[in-house]
Image (cartoon, rainbow, N blue to C red; front, side, top):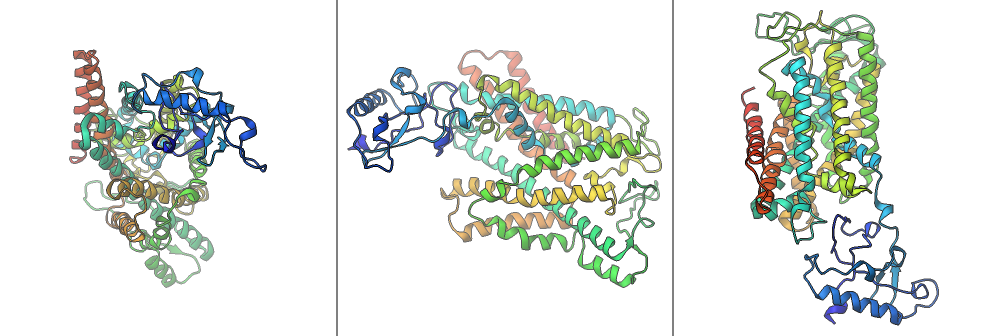
Length: 559
């Protein structure tokens, strides 16, 4: 009776095969424990028949192999000739019938080009808006060098994460993620610490989203109000003239002074000034808009499932493509404004090498961060032998995208009359709310973030509640308390510290310390040592990676 109750489709897998838990569409036919049923015995509209004798014999044979070893040992798994062909795999019912598995192994796999762009789309987040600011903080030449160097380091560490489950012998790691690998090497400490640092990246992203959504909603409403009431702000904003206006939201009007202009006064044409002031009172970027978003987003976070919002992930690709087009058009119209001063600061330009470069490394650590989900993304790759190549191509595309946007915005920023130091952490803030093309970009990004934000909240809820309570949705009260804490953090940051560049660099350096530098390097060295292949050059290099991650985090507090 005990054998009859055991599931015939277990998670035993061999080699480099992969499958998703709980999904019959991605069953790996060479590693599952199958049950063969003749076509006449498949469930249909006809009266159900009992399982044939051949099927019973095959089932007993597979049970015999499964008794020879534990479920995690792959040495005595059933040989290939015992396992039926893909079209003969069925799920056995205790009633004596079987149901055909829908789909096949290949139907759930993606070609390399799909996998590459899936990684590109996943990595392309809000960090792209801060890359020009980061390059300005490091200096143009040093910023480009750091972007290339950081991208290569992040690629190597991601490669270590990707291959880490395969380096564990005699254990079925096909369903493992990197936290499972950390648990194998470091016990509960590794599992919980990797979870905590993964939460830092997710919650940091949600805080940045809240700040940006407040920004985009404010500018979108400002555009609509100004257009409807014929309000002009062109004469009151500090910036360039012409059709492609570029502004400096917080100009230092006295280069030797310590004060900046923090308020932009709206000029109107034909409208009562009191109406404009009243609108500004109720439509404030930091005082009211972050609170308005609670009404919309807090109920969405409490949804039990996030599958509805997953349908809108394609908006991320559209937004990034539109941003690239927008940057290209602006650069063509504005032209390049560059002067190379290697170490000296001038009136309008920043030096090529600046001591503020750790701010860029912190931003890039999050910009290139995909280490906590790369194993899952690569499982769907049809040709597993091309994983390293596809990962490298994806990182190349991401790096080129960041380099293109960052370099063009920095080079095209009109200096003079504006100074390069006016480049904002969100480069869209350097364009007035009346700019139609930028208005479209902000609207796209706003709608995209409204749909992605509940997905991020769902991931946080699944990991936190699953680890603490063993249930992804223990109760509505538990979920509501967690969501209030997350939303409250976003509201406070949007009100008192709406600097997405600093939020990104701190969260990136924090999560990167563990999930990019420390854990991958330690896992790699321990694995090599157990195999007797660890050499001192490798030990020195990976120890240097750990020190680099620690220095990256510590430097953020001194910038």
